[in-house]
Length: 432
Ligand code: EPZ
Image (cartoon, rainbow, N blue to C red; front, side, top):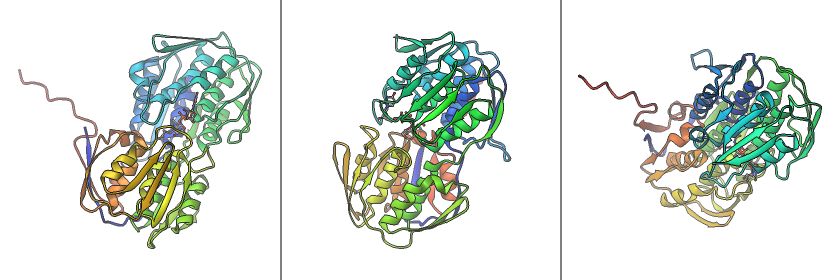
């Protein structure tokens, strides 16, 4: 298992470029299941979850080209013949976003067999709302041996109101509704930019979607969708991670190739703690040269402060003067990083969904363990300001959602190196 070795104390200086959004690329790749023509996606991040999605689609019979050459981070997905509309437990257990194939498969093939995702480090993460919505569209759903079987000759448009705001639930049903008979109205939808990006692709494919990015989305079903070419939006969570890293290390960092409009809640929270930023076109400059003060944080659905940056903000809060109360409203177990931060010297008390962080506490290097994607990012940020050399184990978590993070950080002055091989080479053939 790969590890990161990080020596703290260096401010991040210079320019770092943001990759394409993992959480937009995943539903857009699943959307290719809806047509028998090729779908070309550009600005695809080179992260493990994309590889996993590629494996998922090829296992169904799709042809997936994935190239990360200099000029392109591009994938071409051609789902002409889908032999087995299934998502196996082996794949779904490594990436619960695999459930995004459920809606498209039922809509395109009339049937789907998808493993239930099972547990996850940050919470139970059920998919009951995905299932309930598909049933409202007329799918017959059974559950056995840990799998969901969904069938429908043709889905029928319906009025669906989500009991809770769910990002992939909105995306799953939005995709299913594009090929349903008649109109579908989705209420209480997620408003994340990744939902709007998916709708952009679907409309390029011939879907008739209005209102994506707002709580109410209307879809007029069509009989067929065609291929399309689409560029994935920048990753706002990667951008937010670098914005917070720049503030923490007292650096002067330009985060380029992002969409500042997607970073509103993060940037206003940094202003609240006293960090200066400047926005210019598709980049945000963070001048972290002054001490910053504590602030409370409450994670909310978009456009509120994203839960996917909560762990990173907690790392920053350990370096802020004063007490920050962090409330995690989206997931029930998303404080795993807190225990590792405490081992580095942070003063954090967990009380249910609230974490009380008392700063500023100097952090000292330690051997720590990554538990999930964003918790790993939080440990990297803490290591960047810790005294000494921190070793972070199980960085495969971070490879799921951050493209070449050690190269990007090294490029702006961080002392970071990876031990082990990201993609282990095949064992050398045993000499006869
Ligand atoms: C998406 O997960 C993201 N993943 C997550 O990012 C992100 O943390 C999350 O949205 C919240 O913003 C992708 O987009 C691939 P939800 P998702 O359905 O869709 C409950 C990362 O770090 N819920 O919006 O799975 C659920 O338990 C990942 O990149 C139900 O109860 O999250 C949670 O409490 C981590 N029933 C809340 O809703 C359902 O059927 C929000 O979950 C669905 C969800």
